[in-house]
Length: 254
Image (tube, rainbow, N blue to C red):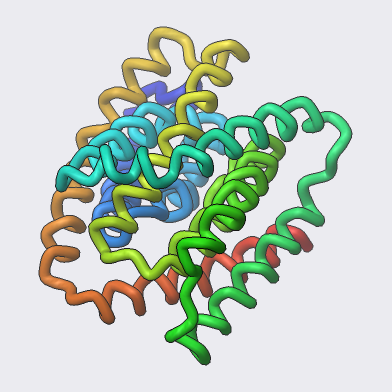
């Protein structure tokens, strides 16, 4: 027996793999505040293809980032602190989208991967180094603009934002709220872009909403596990994710 998911016939086994991918992505997102697409896409793409996978994740990306941005009451302080980053990111998205037809994203993946590796090395060998408040005023908008540019041409906003936020030495809950807020500002244009291109019709939108259920279940489990982590262990998980992200980006550029 097969069912149609995002225009692709899916068997019961394939449906189970898709649900597992969604729950896994939610678990990683709940645990460290990022990584939903990266954790979910491999299984989803295997089952429904890349367009179908992005379509299924699009509503969840927005919903879980709203959830994490407001959870814990950090949203007002994060908005006050990071609005220059968000503004610069919006400008970068516009430039990146405009340049999409002329810029090859492959070299950008390599540059982003190397930058993440350098930031990772800095945090491993000099963990005491942090971005000062004075530097934050300058580095924040630069990181936002680079994230927007990279996201505009590849839909991948994370690397510059992760490097910047890790350098601020935020608490684990502040980190999750900040990255969720900034990811949210990148996810909303993605959803409207899919609708504009006709990828997100009525049926696809319903399936994307239903996909939030396994994502939310996985996220709740991840959040409970995060609550048991102390600051140093959470930082180690973020650094491990940065290593995975760096090598994934470099591999993507080859």
